[in-house]
Length: 313
Image (cartoon, rainbow, N blue to C red; front, side, top):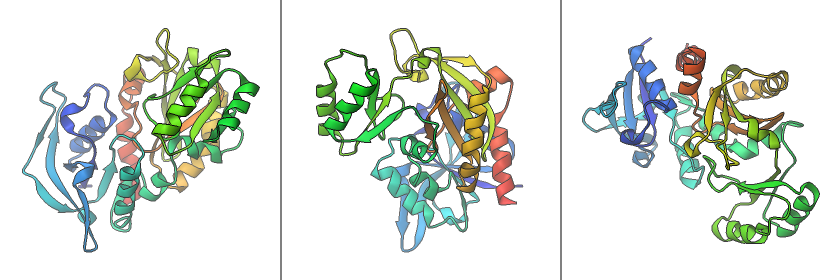
């Protein structure tokens, strides 16, 4: 099957070729003989009923400092593409949401991965709330009194932006910490959205597990252990990746959410599990493929493209 693939993502020159999941997705597509185009989200346009982008034909290679080359910029009609990978990094803000609205116009002619309507309706930290019994005790609010009451009940808490990503703005408040009032003021002044407050799960010291699901089925996992003195396990803030397998509880969590992911056209999803709790469902630009590949001698990007080709057939 020969396909035309457009990748909506961040600038190519800034990616880490040894860690970026979009890069290996592009490598695998090129290996299969697919034609690749790259465009930035701010080059996406809706004009007179057409969805267009200023894009560059692209070739990729695993060569540090020489990992891509572009052809001449051209305007492409995205409805003529077979697949669009929506892979720009969050934040999940109004620019991101607007892009999903624009791409929704071509959903009948072009497979957008992940489905833009479902992406729009599934913010990472909110989507989890639709599955009973899988989250740690959680509060989503802007009400300072509710936050104080939640802390009085659970004592040891995490507070973070509702639409944050990559561990940015995550604070661990232990019992006796006097910074809650200042933090609530800071969040209220800098964000219009509510905050998310959760009971601190001490199991995070043993790791925050990233599990990859393809079309609702588990294909791999990796454990991310926080650095000493850190409450965050994200690898770009010093988290250490470790080989991992799923526990019985994690398998049950995946079985509970998998059918919904498949039904909503969420082909490539990464979930985060701490202890026995599901904390996030990442549908915007999940990562972790290369780390899992190295530990498991796998090729998860091939499984993703197999699923995409299956949808097209």
